[in-house]
Image (tube, rainbow over all chains, first blue to last red; front, side, top):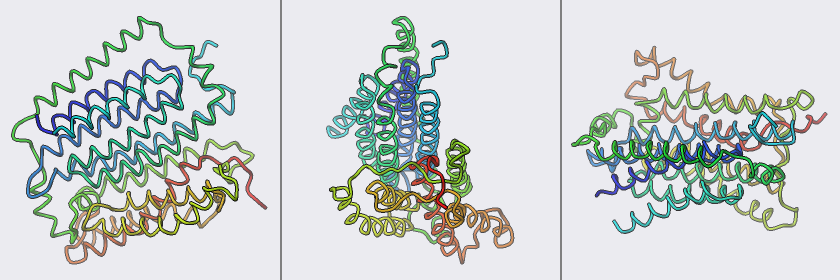
Length: 102
Length: 311
């Protein structure tokens, strides 16, 4: 098995773990962490595909690699917005939960 | 290969820890370590540019943001821990996630052979951009529209964060990031590290045209230095109503857009560069974009205004 396949399988597990976090954790911050795990998995899948596309003297296909760089920065800005929304919720209501029936 | 297997096991172990840890703060720490190891994975996948970005943003700046948030949310972290879905729902979620993982794993194992790649085209057209780093060429020339939109997305996220300020403090200053006492080690570290870090940031940006590096990686290091000096209390966050600050924030996207539009006249296409001046134009875009991204990233971490503006 090549390194690309190994990390590709690793990325599949990361997406599953992140999705699980997103679903089962009641705390929003844990959901944000789960979302970032999914993101890491998806980016790593791109990395595996890029590595398989090594050609013309490059170690990997530069196009998916550049897309991942864009993705990491956008994921960070979305995380920052989500965290700020959460902190504002906590400031306003004194709690940080998405439950509506309490 | 043994190294790769060990690294994959460690990465997965930290991901499991991030998912399963009872304490939110422990999960956050696990996630930061996970990001650092992921950067190592990127090196193993022959993507040093992505590795730099992952280490700087995915682990570093995200880590500062998440650790800060989990510290502020500590009072409610324990209260919320009791609630949650019941065992059956958890089981259903586990089954669903396993199916998703299995589907993705099948895709990975069934990827077409030989792998489709754009590397030969990138290599063929690299000369026309005057750059030596194919990833920078994709970011700044072949897929420049993505990068332009990304700088705008960063600004939109910052606007979203600023608009969460209450009316009273609108246009004011972000909550103090300051954690350290003035005589503490962090202050000394910030004084020593910041000048070196700024040089490293500029260097990483500058070598990006020919070697791993580039505007995002350099900008993140510059942002980290600003955040560090703010945390050490050496400088205060600027009031968001300051005109110079807003000019710095929009300078990058504005220059990018202006040169992109000028492409219609110079090369007959939006974001087209005439071959003779491609590198000069790309650098003209990259310098303000780096400054704008650095300022945006630091302010995204600093958060919305929470103190009224002075005067």
